[in-house]
Length: 70
Image (cartoon, rainbow, N blue to C red; front, side, top):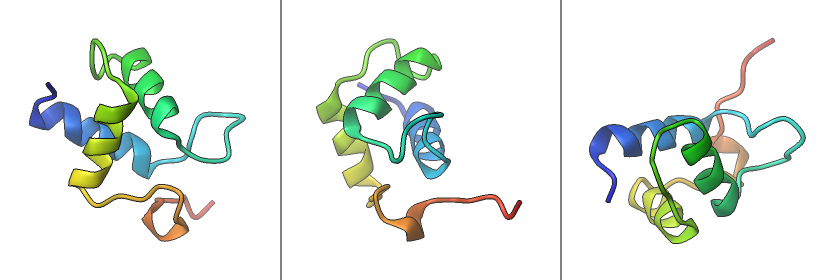
């Protein structure tokens, strides 16, 4: 189970650009990156999906993605 700071960190991660070489975030990529970045010790695709659903995020839609103005 994730606590609020962990969920917030995942939301912040997903609102940013996907990792180099990726066009968009997927639930598998979110789970892998959250573990790699130390946000969660373990995270499955379904839990990543539920975090997105709980926060009403759809990272495949451009309006939900934060882009730098560079």
